[in-house]
Length: 145
Image (cartoon, rainbow, N blue to C red; front, side, top):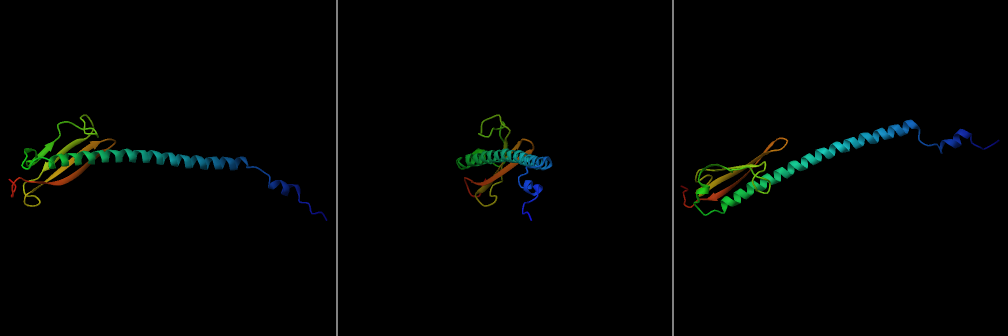
C-alpha cells in the first residue's frame, strides 16, 4: 500500500488566486476607497463650515467687547438697531462675506442699570448661516435713560 497523496491534493496548497477571486478583491477594494473618498469630501466641507462659524463668533465677540469698553452713557450704546457700514472678512477687515448687526435693548432690560446688546453675524457660503452673541452693558445712571 502506498502512502503517497494524489497529485491534485499536493497541488492544492501551492495554487495561487483565481482570476475571479482577484477580481472580487479588487472590486471590494474599489468600493471601500470610493466610500473613503466620499467621507473625505464631507469632512472637508464640514471643516470649512466650522471655520466660518468660528470667524462669525469671533466677529460678534469683538463687537461685544468694543461696545462694553465704551464709557458709560456713550451714544454708541443707545437703544436701537445698528448695522456695520460694510461687509467684513474673517479678520475684521472690509470686503468679506460677513454682515454684522447689533441691537441694544431698552434701558433696564433685563435688570435695573443694564441694557442687553445682541450682536448677529450672518454670512453665506454654500448656504446661509448666522450666529448671535449677547451681553449686558451698564447704563450711566440707574434707572437707565
